[in-house]
Structure formats: C-alpha cells, structure tokens
Image (tube, rainbow, N blue to C red; front, side, top):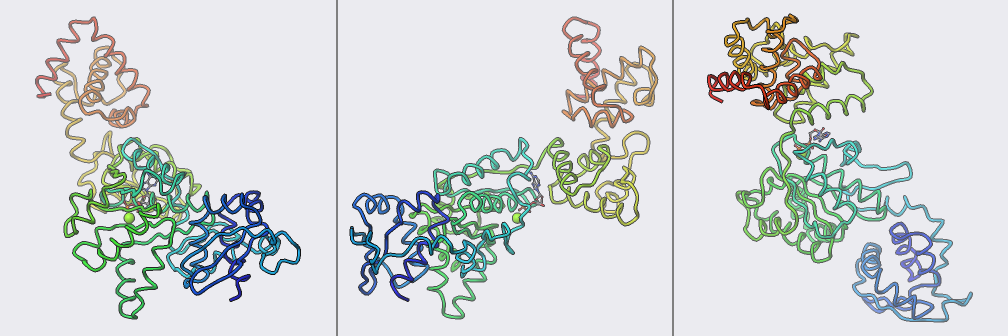
Length: 474
Ligand code: ADP
Ligand code: MG
C-alpha cells in the first residue's frame, strides 16, 4: 500500500470521530512524507496544525494507523509547508476522503463482536437494538445503575471506569450494558465498541490458541474504545481466560478506554477469581440492580405494552405486576404469554387469563375468588389477617369490609383496615384497592389520609388502632 493510500484510509477512519469543520481545518493538506520500516512521518502545513493534531488526536491517529497497517508502530509529526502547494505529491486531497462512505470504513471491521452504525442506522447481530437507555424503565432499585450507564456513555473512559454492574438474573444487566454500547456509538459514531459475553470471550481464546492466532486475538481486543463483557462470572476458575482478560483490561484501562462489566455478584464475592483481577474490577464504579418494586414492575409492563402497541386493561397489568416479583424477565415473560394467547384467540386480556397462566406455572397455589384473584397466597394471608382482626374488633364481617356496604361504622372499619394495611405492609394504593373489592386507588389514598389526620386528635381512634395492632403483633 502506498503512503498516500495508508493516509487516506487513516483519514477515512478518523473523519467520523471528529466534527466535520474541525476535521477539514486540521487535516487539509496533510500526508505521509516518509516511512522507514515501522515509523511514518506525517506532515502538516503549519506548526500550529501539527501541534494541535499531535496534542489532541494522536491516539485516534495511532489507532487508525494500526488498523490500516499493523506493522506501523510509531508516528512522527513534522511541518512541511510545501504540502499547501497544489503539486505536492504527499498530500491527500481531502475531497476524496469526504466522499468516501462512512459505512465502507466501518464495514471493514474485522471483528465479529463489533457493533457499528451503518447507512441505515444501527446494525448488530450481537446487540438487541431495543436495549436502549430510553427503553429502560428507571425505578428506585435500578436508578444508580442507570445513572452510571448514562454517565459512562456521555464520557467513556472517564471517572466511571471500569463500570461494574451486578444483580440477580433477569434484572436488566444485559439491557443496560448493551444500551451503553449503543449510546456510545450514537454519540461517537467512529468509535469501536465490542460487546460480548464472557462465554464468547472464553470460546474465542480457546479457538485462537487452537489456530495459533493469539496475537490476532490480543490485537483485536486491545485496540477498541469500549469493551463490554457480560456475565463475567463465567470466567470462574478459567485461569487462562482470566489471565488474557487481565492483560486486555490493563491495556484498555491504561489507554483510558471504557470497560463495562456485569456479573451476578460484587467483585469481592466472586469465587474462583484471581485477587488481582477482582481488585481491577472494583477500581471504578460498582453498582447493584435490585429487584424492582411494584411501581417499577407496573411501569415496565406499561412501557413494554406501549412499545408493542397493544392495549391492555391496566388492571391486567397490575395483576401481573403484583404477582411476579422475582425478576423482569419473568414479568415480561408472563406479559408476552398473555399477549400471544389473546392474539391467537382474538380475545381481550383478562385477569382470569393471567390467573390461569400464573397457576399453570405454579406461581400461585390458589386463586382467591372473591376479591383478589391476583394476589399471591402469602400476601393474601397477611392482608387477610389484618382485615379479619379489624372485622372482629368492630364486630362486623370480613365481607362487609371488602364489599360495597356504605354504613358508617363499616366504612370507618374499612378505612382503618386500609390504613393499617398501607402502614404496616407498605403496599401501593392500587394494590390495596384491588384487595378491597377492586376499589380505585384514590379511595384508599383518601382513607389513609383521613385516618392519619384524625389520629392527631381522635383519642378513641388511637386506642382502637393501637389495640388492633397489638393484637396482630405489629
Ligand atoms: P440480566 O442480564 O440481568 O439477566 P436482562 O438485561 O436480560 O437481565 O433483562 C431481562 C429482560 O428484562 C430484558 O428483556 C430487558 O429488556 C428487560 N428489562 C429489565 N429491566 C428493565 C427495565 N428497567 N426496563 C425495561 N426493561 C427491562
Ligand atoms: Mg444478562
């Protein structure tokens, strides 16, 4: 390849990473002046341009140069005022670079794990393109992780390096990790982003060793801008993979490249890992995702059904959110089942259908018939206990409290039980409304506020509630 071709390819690679006016300003009338064995001398028309580019873009240039020709190790920068002349043989005419399609350059990536943006938007076999930060519903249990991912994608290689996200299964690690990759690509289109699972990483190492291609393997991963490795717990007791990853990690980290990792445990609790690697994992930011609360679960269901453009009765979504507490994957799994069954049968999703699906999965052992078909058994028990105790205390029946009767003494007893349920069990108003014969959440809210304010002055009420609570052992 001629020097001119090399420089042109380098410029094609650098172009998408720099704003166009800046690119034009600093790379007009530049070219490779000379080359000796593994060093190239890049010429600039003015001392100012040389200094500017050398100070700011050296790393980008070096990376691009090595992609184009891995035998080039060093770059020297010199001033050559003759580059401004029309007849200069060294310079690359910028127009020829500007007309080159971005996609062409990125399509040449030699890495099957690389994610890139093509002419028609983002393409990737490796990433799920709906795993974006916008599609990620933020609740109190995942907001730290979400915020850290946002920070990383706006400033890759900055203070949140490495970013280490951990949680139990199905809580959104992969979603967030992929979203970081997509976001970095959107905001820095020329950057090289790798997303892979630790399992794929291990398989590739084994393959590389088998084919005696470990050098290629090393080069491939140590020249990227953002390296995302999912489920690193897979490297447990895999010494060779750990060692290789250790070196990759150090190289990337030393060059201020972003590293994002996920795992099922915090670094210190990883078993079968070398201490030095665990130490590296904890050097940046470590964030945990906790299982989402009811509100977040409901918001996730709403978001997903909106995304799928299906209209589902809020009660049905509430019912799913109420029952599936384990993780988001299961939660969405039930939603998808509901959607597919109703689409197949051309019916509208109902609470009964959800209950069927849940009991067929043994998620609930028994469905409460009267008032709360959607509540898991142990939850029913504690709410039932409260309702029963309140009913006994006021000499009314349980059905009175749940049912529609509007007699004054029953209404007060009902409001008191709602208050205690909310106060002691901290269920949402919606959920409590469900138990109380499918009442609206504002009714529950009103009851709660009413009792709370009356408790400030009404001594009889204080006595009653204290007695009920004492009886229940609260
Ligand atoms: P993990 O990698 O932790 O096992 P995933 O990222 O695979 O979990 O999440 C499982 C599913 O749940 C995915 O479909 C993901 O898009 C979805 N999901 C998880 N958390 C959220 C959230 N907060 N908002 C929207 N979708 C989510
Ligand atoms: Mg995952």
